[in-house]
Length: 356
Image (cartoon, rainbow, N blue to C red):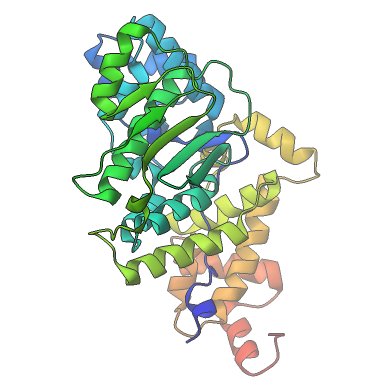
């Protein structure tokens, strides 16, 4: 079996974030933190166009601006100039999803950071920019965003602590950053707390965000390194990067393909995943002379034919993979699509009567 076949993504891909979106996992601890401040997290989230129910789904995506504005709003509402830092205290780098798993499985810190730089924009947020700078004695993990999000002080505090936590996991217990630069105007009275949480000197009003550490750390072996896991996750993310699609039609197709086996593939859930209303989704698809139902049927036809060409799948398996609770319902739909039953299609294919 070749590597290309082993890492192929013949099955459906989950939706990937668009240019201005980010993974909602960054808000996983938000409801509990808001409650400790005596606030209703639901009203705060809804004020910034974030559905409170989707916070439970770490793979849902929201607009980056909504995330930034929410943190700034909470900072003002709770009179907490370090709200973003407090949120990161309750979280771990796992909010970055499988990219974190890939980093932990890497052989060296350098390899891990290179993976972080390459794949954070793919699965976490295309708006994110990560860079590894290597000097003679000091290396820096730098980060920023590709778009203007206005005042994003709290988001930078949040990212700084999460990135320091990740580097500590990679570098080992004795990892110690030299300094952290943030392009924010921090209050003087907050600097002591920032340095305590980050574990190093903090430089206020820097020109860019960066965490600095000794360059020799880059060649340090990672205790959790696992070459098999690294190859598996890295191969998957590489294929995801190659297959990443951003047009609305492509994203709806990806949603349909990933959701059909759940038996709950609906336009309502698709719109929710894309962080828009059903009416907006219908309108945008209509601008391209498309409809959700047409895309759903097109994907079912294509997947059905692909599945029927796999002898290891029974007709019940094929029906279930397409979201049908009964094989008979699938059979009637398939005959309407193609003029033959699933069994006839499979027989014709293996007899050489259906194009391969």
